[in-house]
Image (cartoon, rainbow, N blue to C red; front, side, top):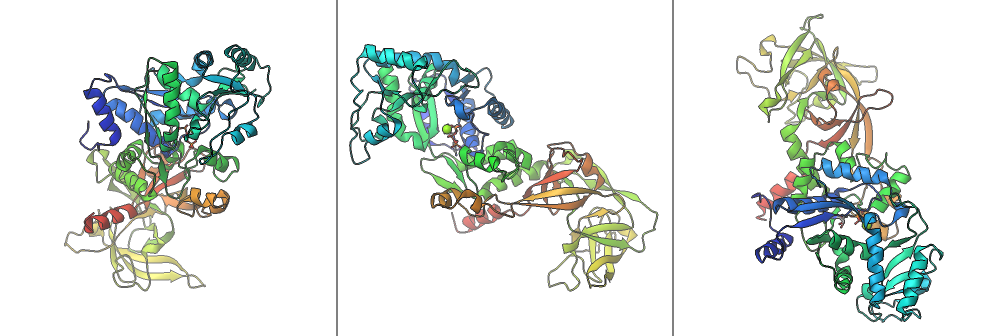
Length: 563
Ligand code: ATP
Ligand code: MG
């Protein structure tokens, strides 16, 4: 176990089970339903399940919980596999589908019927709901509850053969209609759905419910610890009832943990699907989406996401994690690996009047000050360059150390320059600066030890390339959109209208040849990643994160206050 690994209540349970010989090999599973792309909440579950298996020398299965064919598709299956792999986890040969167990589930259902523990119920869905009772009132038994075993077996077979219409009847467990736990009031185990399944096609028209399929899938695969989110806590008695009643040889332990909620976003596939379907985002992998594929396209790294999942830890109560923490993890990782380049977002022309008109030179730049092995590159320089408009002030306030009339600054990796003249258009807008340079300061250092306070990034006007940059901000304008939605405000009204701002940028020429998926930093501007090729050949960079780290500030404050 790595020393950075925090202990948590699940690790404690596993260690106790190993110490007391209850299990020799730890077997966990990650059980996504292929009805959408994975999001950062799933990453938490993936890191937990695969992480524990790795730590304790066991294994983790990837199991598709594909029991609800209406919303599932092979596209999602493939996307989920890609995302799990990209996060750095490997299920080896342990790829499973709940649909492969349909035959077994059917067998187990018949066993329950034979034991007098399940029955076919002809109440309508509304009646079933009404008969179920409430938290304060017991339920009412279905009039079909006491059908004979023979009748139930016959009816269940008829259900399987498609002899009933959808909604006409269901198979229910016979447990206790007055149980204080509503999940135990004769829950539905099978329902009729005349829908083709993406793997079993039209073989089945009855499909098991999550509660019936999940515990049995776990038992069939010999899972030792079945980790799920807190909302399943009240389902655990049913999980145990099914396995106990069927006396399965394996009875995994269900353990619940708090789901991840992240500020300024939503985390349910249903809601994410709504954003995709209605065109509020550019697909599941839109860089604003909290999906793994969106984060990948945004330039987040698997290392950063794993680090984030480790830091948030595993708890027993729900909370809302600050999006800034995730960005902080991304910055920390990118700082180590991103190659530095220069790019100017809001260009202001600078003419270096004492630099020869036709001269060009190549200056040496360091690719990553945090990583010597990243090497160096050449950056072209000439008489005309662009700097960032915001790096110049005609009337600088105190402590403005960048360029202003008569002031000297360093051009990164190039020369010291001094502003001699400001050129304006007829409206008084600054259109150009005229500067002189000191040829003795090549590389950006003065041999006479003369110091300058400001260092600016720049690009050569003759050599730079124009690219499109996409600046992303929070997808939603409120911290907890899920909560606002519950109050009746539709999700679309909670979207941040400024979540995507596109603009042109001028970048040094080396940047347009960068390999896809290479994180880069535009010095002093932010981290970026090359987007997938656009159809019109436009080079697009997605801004991954800004350089400013709000979380680091929060952390420093907490430390100062002794937390
Ligand atoms: P959603 O509501 O987003 O559709 P889900 O729970 O229905 O989520 P599944 O595909 O069934 O999605 O989930 C696969 C696994 O991921 C489950 O074990 C589930 O508990 C876990 N999981 C889903 N969302 C989160 C989350 N926000 N935090 C932690 N784990 C999660
Ligand atoms: Mg689900």
